Image (cartoon, rainbow, N blue to C red; front, side):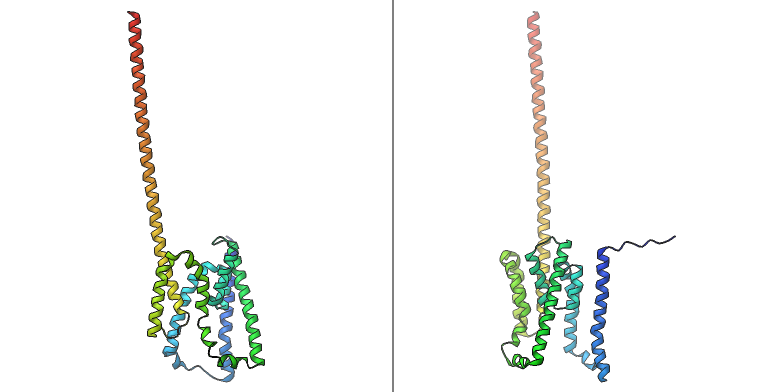
Length: 281
């Protein structure tokens, strides 16, 4: 019996192409340092991989590598998710562009239109990034701009605040619209940031603090969702019981009215019979 091939739907096609390009991208990323090492005859110092300078960033990136697809994939969609994770810079570039694109052209969650908008936003931000980087590399190559930037004490610290500035500007209006929803997570994140900043426990983990805030907000949102779900269920149960009570009252009224009607009929029959008896007499 000849086996029939299952029809290739769009989602399967997108995932297949995305995995192929993702695998090719990973191979390209790995091949560059390998080619440089082979060409110059150098090998990595494997002892460095056992130090905290490598272990801590590895743990942070490992956790973010698990958290980012879960958090960002529903927002990005299939095509833009593969493109965004392949080109990188999600937190401080791709996600803000996608959020802004959805604000300009709102669509329904999970729809093809939303995925197309996300893909266009990610692709556009990637192309713009490539163009800007090419221009800056050209400027660094033909001028002393790099030394000027490195010597300016007020420029370099600003780069560590880019992610927070972007997410603060994007999330500020949502906080203003829903102050009660954002009050507790904002307070927890603020206290945690002060503690980590004063005690220097986190070191220089950069935007890793952002994922702590996202995790807290996600837990609080889940708590609020379950609370609202129970509230809605309680309201529906109350309405159901109220409807049963109204039906019972209606049936009781109908019963009482029917009894009154039957009593009236009996009394009318008695009156008619008594009148007939009188007439006969």
